[in-house]
Length: 259
Image (tube, rainbow, N blue to C red; front, side, top):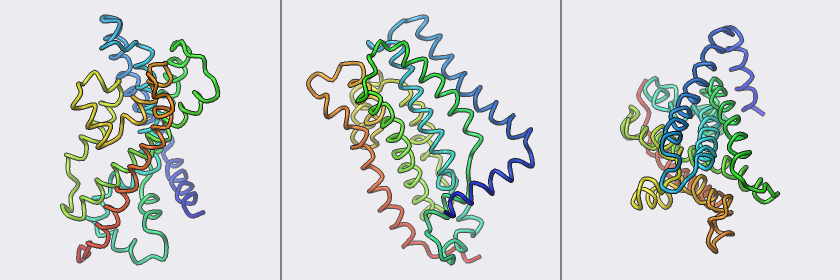
């Protein structure tokens, strides 16, 4: 498959500068670990946050960072899509007899984000052991779906950001509110931000569908909505459908940079 050929090419490129690659991975790992350390110090002082324990918040943090890291690894082409527009490279992609989405995905990989993924996985193991949950098969499946759903939802946000570039040419910093900013917001249980933020990040941009609602199911706070909360990661994945339509509308509107 051509997508894996793109990955092999990227790996060959990184192999030429191995020291740089490992230093960047180390830096990414330390960035993720530093954020978790700040959470740890906060809970060490206050013990709980709006009724949420340290282990519950740690599970949120791990799931969100793992999902975002995977998305950045495989879908960086959409996150940095404005460069393709500005340079005129997107015109060439349109002329090639390959799927456009696949070409944009293959235009850029951030394999250095594996550092965050590794730290996120370590935090996930720590949270799972200290959550006090009996990890039955259904809860393990829900936990996996949390991460997969997060990947799909973040990818949808990347699609929306890329579609905006057809109008603005340059990428807008406002998109970072919902990518990097969304990652930081979703790193904690959403109710700590109040009802307005909880509703927005559940029904508009459904971060709550992969971190907050399934977490309620995992820790036994579903209150009669266990099936709905367990399936919420799958419901959240539907967010990518309107995002794909917006992306396709932007492609149809595109008139070339004239390069």
